[in-house]
Length: 496
Image 1 (cartoon, rainbow, N blue to C red):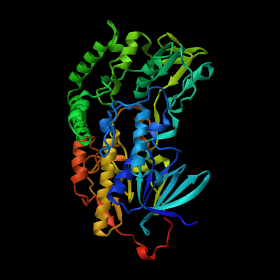
Image 2 (cartoon, rainbow, N blue to C red):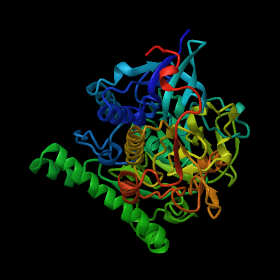
Image 3 (cartoon, rainbow, N blue to C red):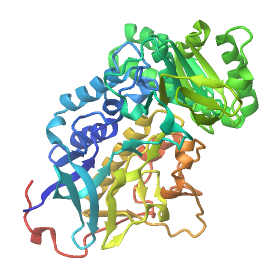
Image 4 (cartoon, rainbow, N blue to C red):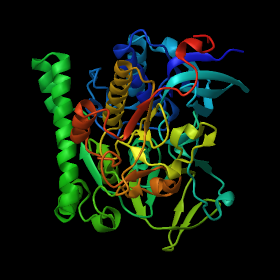
């Protein structure tokens, strides 16, 4: 069977993949592309997770696309609203017809002789082959089929229901029941107030506290701008307002961690019941932004604590019992349901095998170029969002940069681009300067980044926007060439 050939192959039909397709077809209307999606639906994260209260932990004016204004009232939106937004973007752009559902990429091999990728895909238990001039990998960085669950002593003895949020039972009835949510990250912060509306009581069991901050789910400045300005102008101004706030607050937190801790503690104390033990349950051991802040819209977590429909316990698990959890400190939490909101398993490039001219690519041995390409990996760009700001800010920039690279190759007549480091003074550092447990568990399997540009990840949208939209493409580190083998006119015909 003759392989299906496209100019650009996009892996993943989530927020990033739909955005990449929009940028591509707007820049190159006649260029062929396909989106390969392992699941049976558009939306990625926002379709996969179904747990109560699931929502964005970033405002939708920055988590939304630059090219498509977010028009819904709530800036901190729930998953169904976000999913509708992504699907609408796909439908409006005619992107849906380019998606191949149930297509899981398992192997991608680049040939320098042909200047093409050969991509093996699992479809209904069989393997089919695509070829492409360029790969855009928008599969995120975690495993969709499996969340992270630690080994809990005695868990097999527990007689209640044990659930990971990544695999939420559709018909779970928790009304009036005692629920323990293990974890203190964004998922736990979402689950606790959402479940507390119906459960008998919800306890958030954390080993250590997290920085928590509240914002209204409706942005009053955005609403005011929308009254006076056209939708696109209001959206752009709100977006930049939020980008500026995110950037300045992050930089201030990193430069002045002590004062930032005091401000956050004072804010938290005001939200909690009188006499609440703030330092036990809301005083992290790490500095602000060593891990991501947890956003709670409209102070919903604090309200649940004040109503006593929820509580926080800071301790370690000694063992599960038949009816709950025994803690190291001696207390016991009775539970009908235990939710293990203990994080994700990371998986870069969708777990696909990568090969270049017959040699397997070991991701951990490669250095990342501009946080979106890999040393020695030709014609391939991958999307990883910011850890200190909205994912889509970096996703949009990544797609825009891909367009600039493709245009450069069109102008020069060269069809292969590959990052190569020839600067011996560049030292390697971890890919993510982030202390979250889910990152630290998998960091050894990730690529490295370099100690200076263009191998250094900025984690700063404004700097990246200037560099990626205006910076030189042919910078000496991104090398351009043509295939070493047959001429384009001599290639075997392929189906499109």
